[in-house]
Length: 363
Image (cartoon, rainbow, N blue to C red):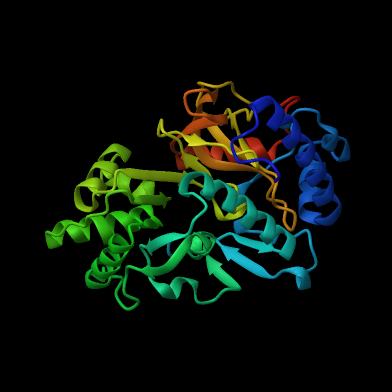
C-alpha cells in the first residue's frame, strides 16, 4: 500500500503479491471452513499453501459467493455487506467486510483514482439516483461503486430522478453551468448501460447536448446489454462525445467480490492491473495458466480481502493479456482486454473441470 498504483515493475510486484497471497491463503484456510474444504478436496490440502509462484495459488470460482456464505471473521466483526448486481431471479453474491478490509479497499481505490483524477476534489455527477446509497450497511454493487467515488467529489449530484429513473436535465444543466463558472470540469460516473440508456440516449432523444469539455466519464459493467444492441466500445465513446463533449471516457473492470482492486483503462484502451492486484489467464477446459496473447478465463488475485476468502477468484470472463511494463504508458504492470463472458455451455464444462481434482501444476 506504500507504493503508487503503477510504480512497480511486474516482476517486483508479482513477488510481493505472491507473498501476500500466500499469507492470505493460510489465514483463510485457518478461519473459513468452506474455503478449507475446497483447498483440501481440490488442491491437495495444507501443502498447497506453500506455493512459490502465484499461478500455483489455490483459487475458487467467483460464483461460489452466490450460493455460500464465505466469511473469515466472526459475524459480529462484519460492518458492511455488499451484494452484486444480479438480474431478477438471479442469486447475488454477498460479501462481508470487517473494518480493516473495508479500510484497505478504500485506500487502494483512492490511490488508483487519484492517478487518473488527481488529488483535488472535483464536481461529480452520478448517472444514478440517490436512493441506491441510502442504506450504508447493506447495498448493491452500484451503491458500492458510488460510495467508493464519493470522496473524490465536491458537492456531487445524482442525475436521475428517484421515482422513474429519468434524466433530471434541468438539474444537470444547472450543475454543469456552476462547474463551468468555477473553471473545474466535472467527473461523471455510472454503470455502462445506465450511462447509455439514461444519459446518451436520453440526450439524443431530447435533441440536447452538454458542453463538458475537459470532463471525465468513468463507467463500468453492463457491456452484455450493449453487445446485444451491437454497440461497440468505440461506438459508445463516439456517441458519448457527440452528446456531452467528453473526450476522456475511461472504462474499468471490477467486481463486488474484490472492491478496491479495480482495473482502469490506460491510453491504449486496455485495462491495467495496479500493484494491489493482478490477473492470470487460464485455459477454460484444463485451467492451466496461459501465456500473454492467448485468450482464456480471467483469474483475479487481490492483496486486499482479509475478512472473506476473495483474494484468488476464477471469474466467468474471457480475456487476453496484451502487454506489460510498457514504457509508452508510463505505467508498470500487465494490461489486458475483456473478450466477453464464457458461454453457458462452456461454463458448465468449466464447472465440471473444477469439480475434479486439479491436475498437477494447474492449481
